[in-house]
Amino acid sequence: MNKKVTIQGIAGCYHEAAARSYFGEEEIETVPCSTFPEMFDRMNNDRSLLGIIAIENTIAGSLLQNHELLRKSELSIIGEYKLRISHVLAALPGETMDDILEVNSHPMALMQCGDFLQAHPKMKVVEKDDTAGSAQEISHRHLSGHAAICGKLAAEIYNMNILAEGIETNKHNFTRFLVVADPWQVDELNRHRSKDVNKASMVFTLPHTEGSLSQVLSILSFYNINLTKIQSLPIIGREWEYQFYVDVAFNDYLRYKQSIAAITPLTKELKLLGEYAEGKSNV
Image (cartoon, rainbow, N blue to C red; front, side, top):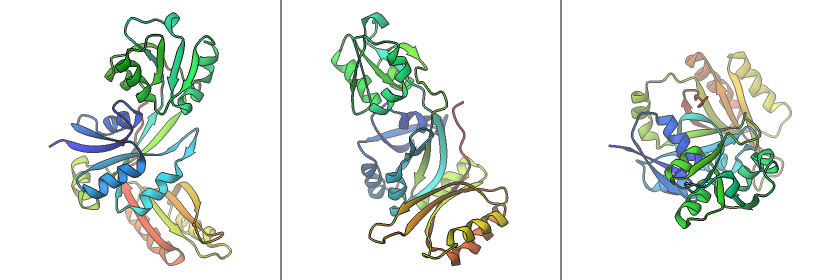
């Protein structure tokens, strides 16, 4: 039976591209959702669903809402994928660059392609809600003279003519996605994927005392645990107190487990969000 994977966005969006890259040759069916909260609601109501969520971007930074949605959920991280965001300019079949008078896309994608757009000043820039959605609208409404900035997958799905590829200004734009599942599926999924666990994500709070964070970091260092990310978020209703979202990488699983046991008494509300294999990228 095909895996069903929830995504934020419509067919052809970057979430779908990341999902298909992560699962490779495995057959998957994507379940589009309009928002990230809708994704988590779907997965909470159907425990068989998997999900893939963007968690950070090398240009825009962390998606703080998704950190919090993950903390509040009962889902576990089972993997990650780092997708290089490469944009194309796509229009109706038969159209050329000279035909394009308007470019549609999400504001972030338009910003990321600023140099390209400046080099084509006759093209009017119009913001839309979505990259793939812009391609879908142009295709379904047969909007001649319009082009979408979107991913290659979206251009292919909506039978668009790709006029230019790699039009993003920064060629080092990556989005990191997390693959999540209900805990009862984790062992089965990991057994089939047979990857070595060498990374973990967790969230905790700390006493509001001097040196509390440095103590935790010192212990992780003592056990040779590599801190790959730390993100703080304020705790609503508790002034000047913070939650810390931490990603760690390790070579020795036993040492990692010992480090967790060692920091637990120093933290409050420590929650392990998942243990998984470090993700690959599409370059």
